[in-house]
Image (cartoon, rainbow, N blue to C red):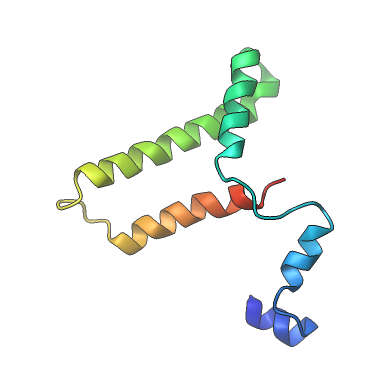
Length: 99
């Protein structure tokens, strides 16, 4: 993607420049999880308005369970270190770019 940005725009940071107009940038990836927790704590977890917050908490819990399982059974797990890193990055990057 960076190579395409350089070829098409002449700038390596073209994506970040466009996203800055919308207030996007590097943020704390755990902020959405904390915000979701506060949203669910203030309202009913069964309300339609809190469904995205509940989903965020469930995905975070699932990711944590998987990482704990891999840490505990590090020797017997068939998952490679690269797969663990890819899973972590796949979860962290969208949360870091959120506003």
